[in-house]
Image (cartoon, rainbow, N blue to C red; front, side):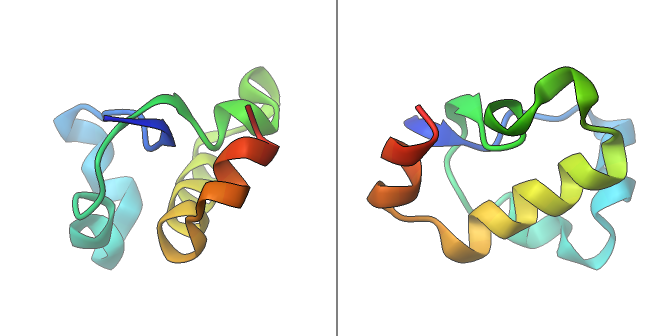
Length: 68
């Protein structure tokens, strides 16, 4: 488990990631999600999925430290 990463999702949510679902499952879950560090309660699900996938593509230690 990493400090920042993707929060686990339940099976019905997988479809919201579309063709990128396998990419989502390619990273370790984190203690806090990237989308949570970006406004948790004001983030709707399409934006959550977009932020999660952005994190997967651009993950780095610098990004983790910036959002914690």
